Amino acid sequence: MLITGGTGALGSLLARHLVTHHGARHLLLTSRRGPHAPGAHELTTELTRLGATIRIEACDTTNPDNLTHLLNTIPTQHPLTTVIHTAGTTHDTPLHNQTPTHLHTTLNPKAHTAWHLHTLTHHHPLTHFLLYSSLSGLTGTPGQANYAAANTFLDALAHHRHTHGQPATSLAWGLWDE
Image 1 (cartoon, helix red, strand yellow):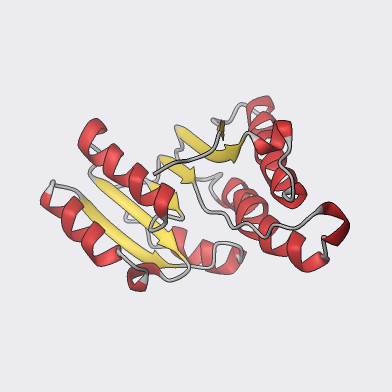
Image 2 (image 1 turned 120 degrees about the horizontal axis):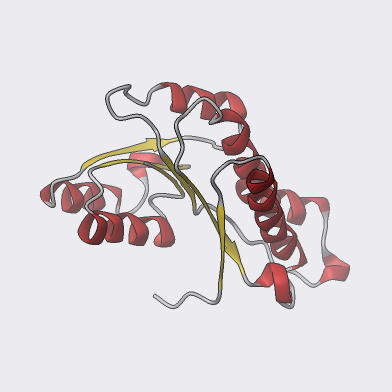
């Protein structure tokens, strides 16, 4: 099981839930800082004590070469069957102030990573391909046109995968409150 954004708030919460409530035993968590991300060591220790094998890797998932390398390190005895894409970054500003930097900062980790995961996992026996989208893609949020666009892409990608007989679910979450 691969979780992008695995050391972030959503990814680590999900990893804990999958281990404690669903018996997940082999998780590969990625983030930009990997094992050096705040809380990564504690998360690994906690989930290992619960019986899971956790691997946290630094990976720029927006780079298809880096992602390919990561996917090629998945052991054959525990094939990749589940991809959960929780990674994302916001760069809020009103629409009239949006710049290419705002778009790039937000689209890259959400949309580009999702596309790379889609194209680079065709040879894996996936049963689940979950995308953490946002309600903002449907309703919009002030100052987040770029974020809405990125999430709309995730929803469209899930639809695309379905039309090609591939597993996909896009979860349009509302506001998170930890």
